[in-house]
Amino acid sequence: MTLANVALDVMREALARRFILAIFVAIGLGLLTVALALDLEVVQGTLAASRLFGQRLQGTAIIPVDVALRKLFGILVYLFFYNGVVLGVVASSQIAVSLLAPGRVELLLSLPVRRAELVIGTYLGVLLIALLATAAGVGGLSLVLFYKTHVVTAAPLAAAIAGLIGFGAVYSVMLLATALVRSPSLASATGLGVLALGAAASDRATFLSLFDAGWVRRAVEIAVAPLPRFHLLAEAGARAAEAGQGWPGDTLPLLGSTLAFALAGVAAAVFVIGRKDY
Amino acid sequence: MTATTFAIEVEGLRKNYGRVVAVDRVDLTVPAGSVFGLIGPNGAGKTTLVKILLGVAWPTGGQVRVLGSRPADPVVRRRIGYLPERLQLPAALTAVAFLRSVGRLKGLARRALDDQVPRLLTLVGLEERAWARRTGTFSKGMVQRTGLAAALIGEPELLVLDEPTDGIDPLGRAHMRELLRAAGQRGATIFLNSHLLNETERLCDHVAILDRGRLRLSGPLDVVRAERAFRVRFATASDLDQRALDCGFDVDEEARGRGLSESFSFAGSEAADLSAALQRALAAGLVVREVLPKLKDLETVLEESVGAGDAP
Image 1 (cartoon, chains in turn purple, cyan):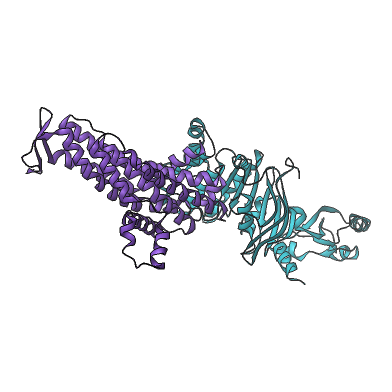
Image 2: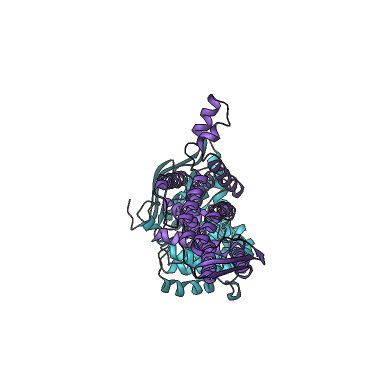
């Protein structure tokens, strides 16, 4: 109950911030633009013509509309994944910092809340906001496309899952960074750094080949070993969206390792905050 | 240790920050239902002590019991209200939203919050038009009032207030004193950390003095302030000063300076000595109007205590 209260309070406070409200307004405006500018002509279950701002989008091939949507979402997964995680990093960098601010954290810690509940509740609260933003973005786009094509597809869900799991892993490290040093800039830099390094090192062999063989390559190998393979995660989401048959089974270990990374980050943040004097 | 008699019990408490000793072997008890003032110079370790009492900082050694339990116990913290020094409110929230958040984390039901939040905001004197404003736009005084309302939510048994009147105007201070007295009257223990000795003197019935991490003095205010002397006032009489001096009394210039004419002091704390002097005065035909123990002001007590700490 306390955990849920902390998470909901974090979410309420975040939603009261103008910057986060602006993100939701931007998502709404983006969806409105798509709704007004995208024109899809569906004839007997096939996409006969598609125009964006009056410009023709497809070639001459006539393809079933559900196939076309899955292809579209296969591409959009990358857009949602990287843009969503970067936006999430920037938007959430202040949240834990403000909770741990001098004069604020003392009051929070004097309330009947365990420190672990405060950390995990904050993490869950931020994930809730990310979930809401994802639901607004991906869900809104699905609704717009459903309105235009009358086809329901599970493809957007793949984008949502990939994005949320990726952001969960990144935010856990941001939370740990904030527990160590209360700085929104450091939290953002850590989040973006982990995302960039995790994405770049997704194909370990190719990434490591960039370094001279020897102790440097070995050191980099050790450094990137625990990082989630973010680009593979986005690829798995894109494959899932294109296949339209749920998450590919062969990528479950990837999901598992990314989740384990997130849990380890949160556990480390609990450890640091649990022992700290405020 | 008995949980029922004392709201706070501290035994051999130590807190080190690296090589710096912030709190050094402090033994302290705060009677349940008392209004307790913790005073001392800057850097004495007062705020560190307060933070340890609330589980915000961890002790290096010693024992702390608050309302009979460890400060880290969330159950006991339901019964505590706290106003931190330099409180920072969540700037994006309104005063109402902030209080509801604190109340929820204290485990209060929605109905209790609906009742308590507006009542407390009224009680602390926050104007109704400010209730729905973001706290980021609040003045220092408004922040303190909102913080006090947060501390009072759930009618806590123990109120811990760190510099509660900081940034509040004199009228607001008087109002806050009234609020704290009312809280005391319903049986709450109030633990006040303030550098304003006048406030402490007017509000508290017990005080403790902390200096360089060491507890210099602790006890009921009247005992702490008591001098080893009495003040005696006689009825107006001819040649009063000389007759009183002959009986063993001294002219009390300090009291006379405050308009208390015919005031004399009697040095000594033994009742038998005072009784003998009074008998001599009566035999000399003087009429005794008032006998009171002489009290030092808290500033003098603090100066003497801190000065005593300097002695080898």
